[in-house]
Amino acid sequence: MHNIRHAVLALIGGAMLAVASTGDVAQAADGSHNELACKLCDGLAAKMSGEVEQPFVFRSFEPSNGGSALHPALENTGFTYDNALAMMALYGCQRKAEAKRVADALVVALETDRHYHDGRLRNAYRSGPVIPGKEGMLLPGYWNTASNSWIEDGYQVGTATGSTAWGALALLMAYEETDQQAYLDAAQKIMDWIHRSTTDPKNVGYFGGFFGHEPTPDRMTWKSTEHNLDVYAADSWLARVDAGGDWSHDGESALDFLKVMWNDGEGRFYIGSAENSNAPNVAMSGLDAQLWPLIAVPDFKSKADRVMEWTDLNHGVEGGYDFNSDRDGVWLEGTAQAALVLRLTGHPDKAEPLFTTIAAQMAPGGLVYATENEQLTTGLQVGPNSAPGDFKYYRLPHIGATGWAVLAALDLNPFVGRAGQTPSSKDSPCPPK
Image 1 (tube, rainbow, N blue to C red):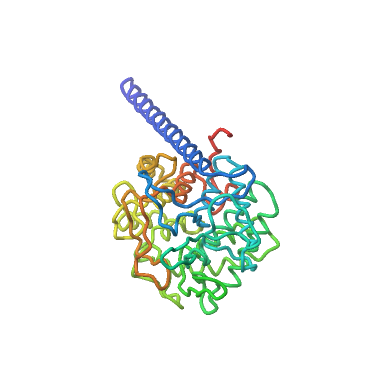
Image 2 (cartoon, helix red, strand yellow; image 1 turned 90 degrees about the horizontal axis):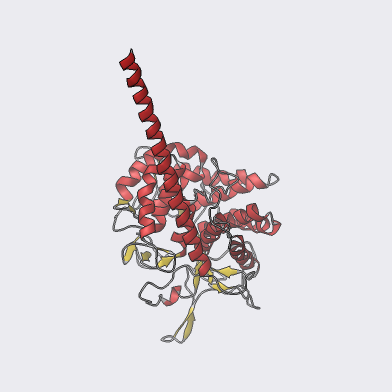
């Protein structure tokens, strides 16, 4: 009995030591995540210029280490999606004054477009401090000396359904953080436009949006899993804060489309549908289409293990994840998304190597690079008339990748906000500036 008692005590002591060690590891990981989030938020804030209360649009990409110039089409371009992420990240770090400047810019963009007054957002705006003139919110573009003309990119001046829904998600977080009615009103207006303008009249789901210049941009009749996920998330958030609306009903069509895109045999989501139908696009895969449903749709969280197993095989690369299944490099934005998803679905240990990759891919200015490689393919097209696969990422410091890295480090789910998140995200460890 004496020996048995000592054996039992030894086992108990070993178990306690293991628990203590596990707790120490978790505490150390949280400390490194907090440090990463604060550094990245400092990097974001350092890119802001103008007056402290002036609305502001982040430039999405910065020149690379050697000071190489951006392509003219990116020189003054702030994508709406990237700015939504940056705003959410800043709120996560309690950099409320800086976050408010971006939220205010989204409201200005909605209310002072040079042509549209119907609730849509453009995919991009002129970066920098916002000084709206008589022509309204400025759009990105550049002077082409060869043609002696001003050039605006057809995608940037268009309106993708998902990008617009991200604007609504960002404004809903701003409303959650500030209780300012203007942000809720703007989010409602955006989602009303999506429901009116991009609904598929024959099938469930929402079309891709519009490409090209006013007054008659081209309608995109394919449907994206990611876009419909964004719509569902924004409608669900609105349903929580605006009980008088019909937001849950509006979001049902997007959710039904997501269910159609689920391939139960393979344990993964299709990237979207072919044009004018709900027939799945089986020719390619997108990482965000796999990851986002797991943290935006409560009923899909139970699919996480199967989806991540498929994703590891088809998107996984050394140190992280690729955008598509050709696995030609690490996409830092998606790798940060995966880190957040793994943590929120109960696999924080699997997320740790991804944080190591992210921390190693910080540019000197405090932002995360878009990719480890000089360029990264996605398999997607920039526009309906461009070359197949011409949408690529380059090794440039990227606001979007930085925003996702902050959200991952803080366990902050951008599809539900703090109030809708269980368990709640960590309080910001970043000291106020």
